[in-house]
Length: 329
Image 1 (cartoon, one colour):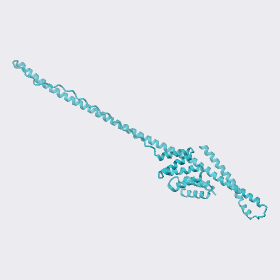
Image 2 (cartoon, rainbow, N blue to C red):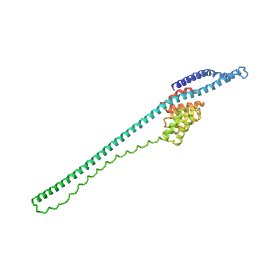
Image 3 (cartoon, one colour):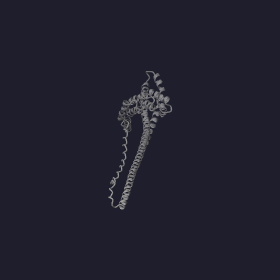
Image 4 (cartoon, rainbow, N blue to C red):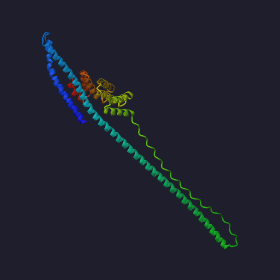
């Protein structure tokens, strides 16, 4: 990219030198027009003077053409530098967005993991407390039954002693039968952990942003027609979106790169009229002035650049406009 910019700068410098060299003889030849106008019709030198004037006019036309080509090359250099800067800014913005998304995803995963850990600990505590409670109930029940059995055993021992002292007496009838021990109750099984809700799918990319990115990809690859189609769709379908002014600017810039200066001027006029508060307005005015200059309309080119300098004196586009004004007639 730096080699390409160096070649463009060299070509622009060479064009400036050629244009200045060609302008000096023409300025020196302008006083001769009055002499030709005062020449008598019968003067034999008239034919040579007229031929010289025709050559001067042809050279003037060539100079105007060189000025237009110089303006196009200068604007191409500015666009290349701007595209490189915009590319770096866009990449930096995307990287920051990705880092933010990764950070939020990491925070969500950490919060989900902490929530799962807390749920598992609660379930473990609940299951252990339930098991302990069940065992305590079983133990108390067994102790109560053992006490009853000991009482029954004491009663039976007393009855046996009475029978030993009175053998003639009829054997006492059993006071009753002891009930067999009931099986211990089965402990309640622990409740399985609740599964975490699946993470919500990531939101789909904004359709305006997707179309805008597609247009930028086409523009950077040199497919200006596809870029115009993509950006024009955004302006027509989403005229009030925040990306609509930028899309309108890239439409005009794409037309300028296609050498359709009339369409480029019309597109930038739409941006200036429809989105006067957009930060793209200074750049749009600079391209509008360059388009006028490329079409040979020096008056409108000068007026546009003067308006740019008056409205946005501190902008980078205004600084470039100051550099281009002296080259306009």
